[in-house]
Image (tube, rainbow, N blue to C red; front, side, top):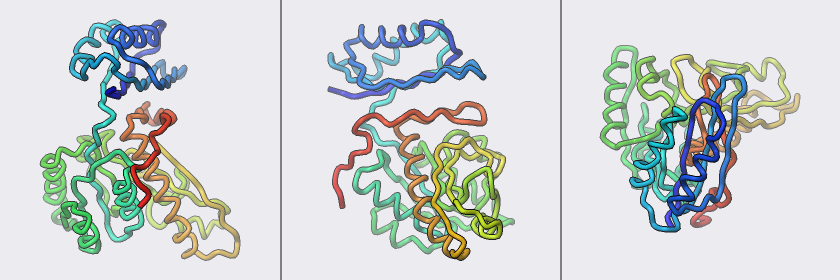
Length: 294
């Protein structure tokens, strides 16, 4: 049986769940997992449904027929084939822990993505990337060539058909134009538990404040630096005896895990933009299973 998922966003009203489930049942589909959220503050409704097509109905047929259901509710909707892997570009500078972690997770099948390219403004990880049979692009960025560099980045995005760009400790600020063009399609990892300690050297800022918890935040990128809608966060405990460099080392593991979880949510179509926030539904059963362990 072919497995699909349906995502829906629309104004909140009665009858949405009934309309969606009735349509899928009529098309010979069995719902295996369903999540929904009604935001009382914004009046928005969010829904994600996993289902199996037991009668062999294909994605195009399901999508075409659903328009009549969606129109009265003013729905934004999308059907996704859960067997298809999302095309992703990873961007990195000189801190490689998130890149290496993601490449490993992709290799064992723990993330449902295909890394179609790695872009860096340095050559440090060329060998690692090429050895993984992934195209590597070194695009230098300076104040003088920033527009040309971003044009080169966007060409890689367009040529590869990438659906998501991941900033895995990419230490260059993207332009407002690129952020707007790629809205909802760029995920960043910030080495701090936002909204605290924004900008440069957050671990140093945390050390100087004597915090007892440090963390990492993965968020969608917007033109407002470190202000994008948050997808995932986590923390690690710190004691008074640890140094600023300890903060950096302890933070590496948290950053890697938080970024991977955010990508997992996005690739499984579990993350929805909701103004300055997100709605992130729980993972379906079996979605964390790996094809192999090494």
